[in-house]
Amino acid sequence: MHCAGGAGPAVHRTILRLDVEGYGRRTNGDQLAVRAGLYRALRRALDESGVPAASCYCEDRGDGAMILIRPDVPKELLAGAFPARLAALLARHNGGAPPDARIRVRVAVHAGEIHHDDHGVAGTAINKAFRLLAADPLKDALRDSPGVLALITSGWFFEEVVRQNPACRAAAFRPAQVAVKELREQAWMRLPDSWPHADSARTLRLLALHPGAEISVPAAAVLIGVPDAEARLLLGDLGLVERGEGRYGVPAPDPGRDPGPALAPQERSAAVRRVLAWYLGTADNARRLLCPDRITAPPLPDEPGRALRFASADEARRWCETERPNLVAAARAAADEGHHDIAWRLPLALWTFFFLRGPWTDRSEALRNGLASARLLGDDRGIAYVLGGLGYASQSRWRFEESVELFTAACEVFSRLGDVRGEAWTLHGLGYACRRLQRYREAVAHHRRSVLLAAAVGDRRNTGRALTALGYAYAGLADFGSSLDHFEQAHGIALEADGRTLGWTLHGLGYAHHGLRRLHTAIVHYEKALNVFREFGDRPGQGETLYNLGRAHMQMSRPDAARDCWLLALAIFEDLRTPQTEGVLARLRSLDPRS
Image (cartoon, rainbow, N blue to C red; front, side):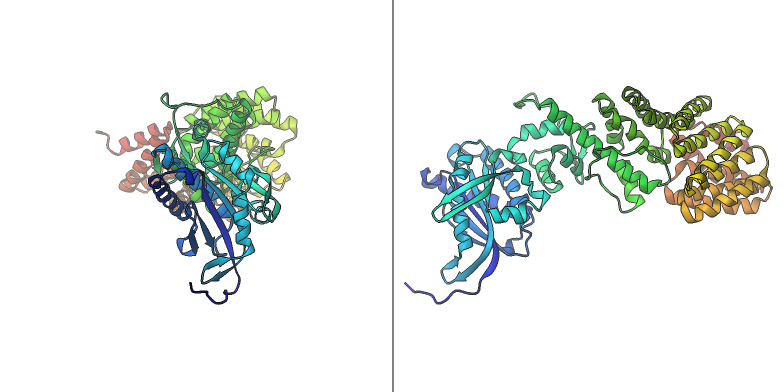
């Protein structure tokens, strides 16, 4: 035998050691089947958990393997994503294998300095990994569980890696006293039944609590209580249908599957609340980008930190559009499940999206449920917010008398509570309802007070919105000079503070010039407004502007241009299901009396 020379310099490595339970009791054929299954699952688990094959040095150990991973690979992968993925793959292997070819493994993870020589590798860190794998508490944990994988880490690895990384789920680990040969220390174990994959029945029951028929990976992660990466692997392992990128069908109860023990009431309620609060927090983050000036309810005391945040308004809008059925279902479920503080907040967080996109039927139902929830809680502020939301929803259905009653009630509560911003918000809606009822002097009074209240609290954006509304109220009185003055004031504020309201100030400037018979100037402002509304995805604003732009073209004897505008407006109003459809149709018929 040739004896080699000296070892190379010490290098730092993460050390992964695996051992198959009961390997030596099997026949040669079964051992070969186990080895093939183990290495197949091992390679795939490393790859799918983000550990590149090129970073690994592997030594076969007959009944297992030792793998060394370079320090540029994040260590938390070896205690989080990798063992979870390996557990899932081994469970899948065992489901189709005869009893003597099934695999259950003990896994030890440590890190430290090692040396390469002509015989392989050596070092005290490697010795520790072997001792950890041989620890009686680890063997007992696997023997006493139906699970497939028991994990142990050194005390150092737990403190420096597991405890510092949420993806490792430190709370799932338990201390274990290890006494093997020269090693005496407290290690940390994650038991076989603590992997999410180990209890697929429980996971399916949790997923079935989702209020909608389709679930995203982040929502599933919150519902199950695992990191996003782990949830993505889990959803795939459960065989759920992937309906789109990162979106899966929610599993329905399967009468042919053993459901196992039911979720405890406390666990069920906590899981439902987590996902409902996540939808609320994410919807409110979307609202902040889509319409940051809109007032909204105070946040939940236990609002989760995992709510999604968006890089742009377009990203927020896409999320709202994709999640719309789930958001509507979540609002309904919040009331049904008794989470009443979420039930009244969620439809308000969705206000901007429903306003921009319509129709409003879903929102009206959610608000009615929210009002009942706020009343059950005896939450006056919640009652006022939801009454105001219902007032805006009534306007969308052209029920302006009802809207006046709702806003008046909301305004009284806000005034009693001393909530100046809430009062200004409801006065804005009350003034709009009065304008639609052609009660323009009342509208002027409400909008004037809204301007004063918003200015008193230094709310520049809502001051601009109130000035814009006041301009429309004066236009209703045919006082287009005062109207133009207020629109110009509002336009100056919108340019510096509020891009979305800018569209309505430009439309208002066009409307005032239109009333003053300055048609060329009116058209210029209408076209600028239309561009802003399109940029912000404000479809009601686009429809209103196209309608008035068509009127201006018609007054300038441009019937073809008018027709083009009215056809576009008609498509929007029909899609939004608003009564304005009839007015546009009448205009189009006037172009061709024979139609």
